[in-house]
Image 1 (cartoon, rainbow, N blue to C red):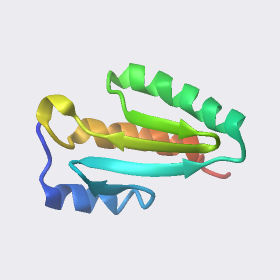
Image 2 (image 1 turned 135 degrees about the horizontal axis):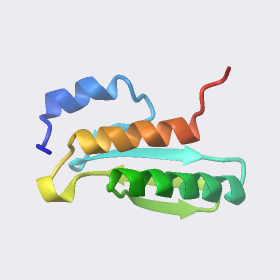
Image 3 (image 1 turned 45 degrees about the horizontal axis):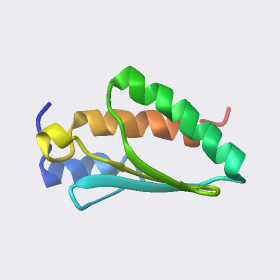
Image 4 (image 1 turned 120 degrees about the horizontal axis):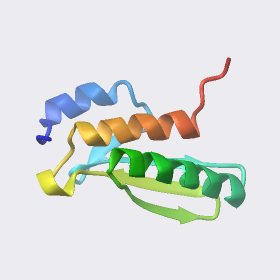
Length: 97
């Protein structure tokens, strides 16, 4: 993977309105109904992380999940971060049919 330019990152973020770019990483915060729902989402996200072999920096306080994505080996945001952000979005914001 190669580090994306700030211009590329900002363009890609147009597809991810919940996410922001700062401090060399993608950041998002998600609020759930309760701790159980938040932890359930974290568990589902963990499986995606393993499948992609890419792991977030994240914290959880009660019903709030805060996530930062960066590719440490490339010292910045890469395509891997956007792939994981997309997977996270599909878990925390499922499409309504």
